[in-house]
Length: 206
Image (cartoon, rainbow, N blue to C red; front, side, top):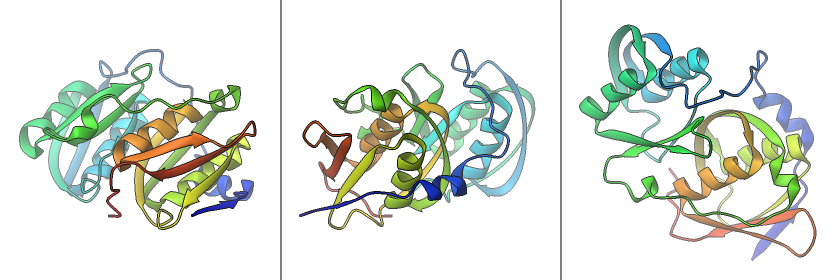
């Protein structure tokens, strides 16, 4: 059963960055960064890179709290990410224009091409969402607040956790990355600006 509700625009205030900056023209992986972390979650490691390069990240399930110790000075973002590949077995691929990277275990199926969703120009609106381990309904509340797009969730999906650092991306890209990571599907309901998210593959609620 689908439960339909209009998601409040007020929630967007909770997840919008106070110091937003423009989206990168390219991937941003050639930009130099300095990262010093000791037994810090991967999400903290990536957030530091994101703030210095404007590259967006979304994490597959189970990675947000993996710990990293690294002292990197004046290296490219690509070199910093290679540390995760070599010592944590975490790989990535670029989404959309390359300004958003999806990270997962090297052999994870989520590193395949994400599902595309049909929809109107309302999905071209740009959004900023930075959350760690947030429930899916909170993620969509922020998305709805910034775009005025409506969402309906199939029963049981509200508490699926999402970790994403997305800055100035299209709503379409934000949705498609979540679909890829969580094994969900999305369809437009009628001619309205309402989209239903439903199980595709069995989602992992971690």
